[in-house]
Length: 402
Image: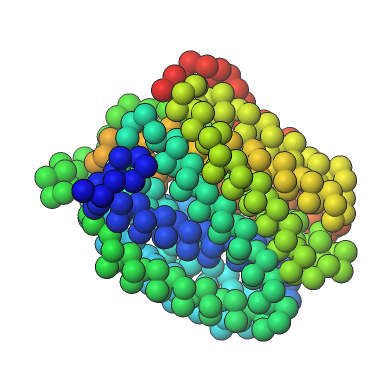
């Protein structure tokens, strides 16, 4: 009998390994876009507002896709939607390389966003299926560290790849990596939803008609979604405005990538230390609030101290906040869902994640058109919006104890 440090049996260990691999590759795919897609769209002739639309298109279709594929993850099991999503994502990335106009890039982003929407809900649902109740934040925190590793490697590698080999090379390499990951996951993983559990939720109409009931959209899940909405509004602004602001300083794509790397390193440190499991012992809401306040402070710092050093400092603070919030928020989703609806729960969670990025990207694009690429005002306003949206989390206080 093979055990991990969480007391998991061998089939569960295979699922942990394969799920974390998909999580890493899915977020690596996301993070390689951060420093290069906005400037790439500009090079194709897009205005700042059009850049915001192109950046938001991925998240807009990902929002819809997360809800639909989250349901499919419960309906078909975890494996099939993940494998299909990985291979279609691989094809969509090739469309980036083939783009010759902003419109073609926009279409590629639409396909990419929908295709990749099964990867994170399916993987996190599989992880949740294998997590002991008293160690959920710890398991999710370690898995979140893979997100941070992807964020450490993705932006600088994308920037370096663009500077030395061209933007097309980055997209083709990402496509190959995604296809290989999908194949390995298909071979290695073991389905966690058996046929008996799937048969309980085969009726789509019944399932969606009950979506508003306390069994699915309960208070815990809503609180986790509100928190991630606040966080991702700020993230959407950062991925749209920060590369443009740094480019206005005549800095290379690799330097822009290193700024996002600092954010990821800070988050990774938080999620590999015992801090990740504190919400298993104390109130999850407390750590949601601490994380949101810290991230808002980081975004405001970038606006108040424009330039490369302000960007490094602000993104470090932002990464610390993310490292505090993410384990608590994802563990709260697991706490608030049953195994037969967990995929849908994570689909809603990551759908809201995408909605926040859409709002932040569009808002940042409009503000950038108004105030200019190098202005700090979009960052300061984004920080204020993050705090405003997170008010329900603050008001909930310490009532949720898990």
